Length: 265
Ligand code: KIV
Ligand code: NA
Image: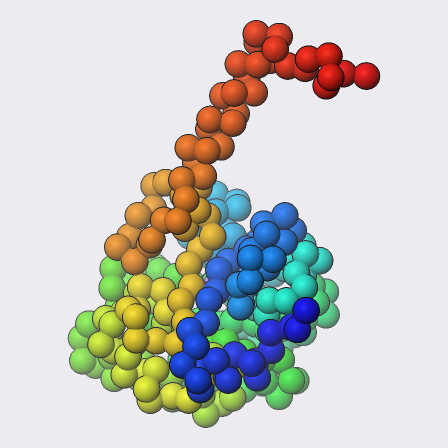
């Protein structure tokens, strides 16, 4: 199997083939999504929400991200694996950003890191890139800044914020980022960004006119049920399927149907 690389992702944009990306946080799920043919697996800090049950992405630690990432790496044969650097491990200064990126690459075996923000983190992005670590940017609704925004509503509807986002995207490209995620912004602005930069732009709630799409695995599988934003297309109802399976097991244990003779030694 041929591994996906940043070079292959760039070729996809150049020929207009859309890039598919999903999150994964553990070995078993990563194995399934990789075998299905996903282009990029994101070990997102959304693990803080869907794995650990926190309300935001802020509490997850670098050690915890490395644990998730190394589990994913052990499962994956083809996908390109990107890992979020968590809140607090890259914003302060560029040496700390580089140290965090190196720990992720060395201890997990992943292929790239993702960081949230534009001009504010320019030095951190550049410093990580000097070490040869591919960086994916993330603009628009950046969940690590949720307490600055106050809500999870659509970003960059105002001209000033839209202009800054476009400039930030160009800056990230100029620094050498290999791709950018745009989260929850108007489709018209996302289209403008995808046309303005040569690198792949991957959207979540950013409309159709970008170079690829990303969703959180547990949301698209219908495991998380409380969270239903407009951009989320649910491809399965795993909550129902799992509930039926659990109830079936409970019933068979109580009724002594399980185990039967052929299931015993
Ligand atoms: O952590 C995450 O899942 C993400 C995606 C939503 C892009 O950053
Ligand atoms: Na994230």
